[in-house]
Length: 116
Length: 112
Image 1 (cartoon, one colour):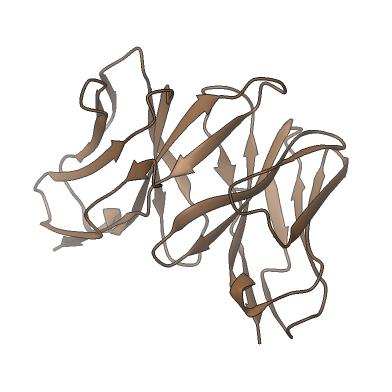
Image 2 (image 1 turned 90 degrees about the vertical axis):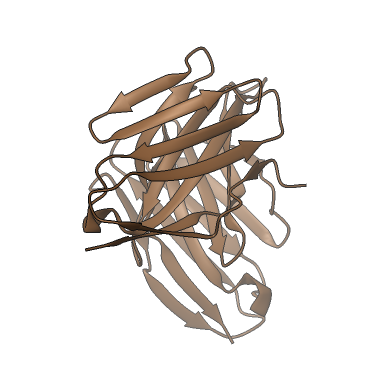
């Protein structure tokens, strides 16, 4: 049962245009959401996050939107640049009791190609 | 990330042999995690640690064990490697709830 879904395995966008990456989740206990970017042969790099008490978070060219009623979040990249070409992973977490630890559940990723 | 080192970066071994991967941190983070990444699966949690000698299982823990005898090091062991454990393994550090995890550069493990 996949709790975090990225239904688009790939996306191609022209340089300078907007890239929109989508993510859906099923677990209503998720309260913190993140986007990671991954280049080949490197580890995932944290990009931006959002808490469930917000519906939008911005950091430079990157904006994450959260729609809790639809259990949907999206990452907008404006303007897109060739260096943004990478695999983007959506992740979500819920607080676990006991040790107070938390785990991330990842989607399968979307490969973004920004065409010059 | 300069604060997290995975070793080895690449390893090829044979089915049935034991394998240990090491994750070393200089950041003094309480939480450490092991993930595997496979095509079509994204990243899946194997085991994690919430302190020295405190570990717990993740989503895909069968065939793996972990140990954390000191804050800096989190070891992942495959007692008897199988071809299905061929994967890229990532270690991550966490500093607490609603904080991002930060990943190492991975270990590419091939089991023939």
